[in-house]
Amino acid sequence: MDISLLKQVLTTTNKIALSTSIDNQANVKIVNFVWFDNTPDTLYFSSVRGTNGVADYDKSPSVAIITIPNSDTIGNPYIRTQNVTLQHSDKVMKDLLPRYLETVPNYQKVWELIGPKLQVFELKLRDVYVDAGLDKEKVILKFKN
Image (cartoon, rainbow, N blue to C red; front, side, top):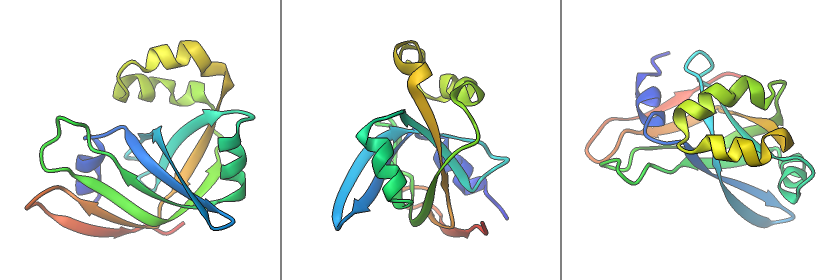
C-alpha cells in the first residue's frame, strides 16, 4: 500500500480532534498524537490516568477523528475517519517520548508536568480519507486490522 500521501499529510500536524459518543452525547477533545510510518494504521495519544477522559475512552471504543493542520500549513491538508478503534496500548510514554519531543513543540514541558501520569492509547485506523489540501490529491486508504 502506498502511504506516501498519508505520511505527507501527517507531517503537517500533531493534533487531532477525537470524537466519542456515550449515551447519544457527542464529545470532542483535541489531543496531540504521534505516528510511525512502519505502523501506518495506528496513531498514539495519551491521557491522564484516572480522569473522566480515560473513563470515556473505555466506554466508547469506536471513535471518529480528523487531524487539525498547523496554522502555517497552506491548503489545510487533513485525514479523517469515522471507523476508528480506540484501545489501551502496550506501549508506555517512555516508548513514545522521543517521537513526541520530535514532533510536538514544547512537549518537554508537558512531560515534566504530568509525564508519569500519562497513559497511552492507540487509534487503529480502517478506512481513512486523506486530503493533501486545496487542489491536491485525495485518496481513501483501507487498512486491515
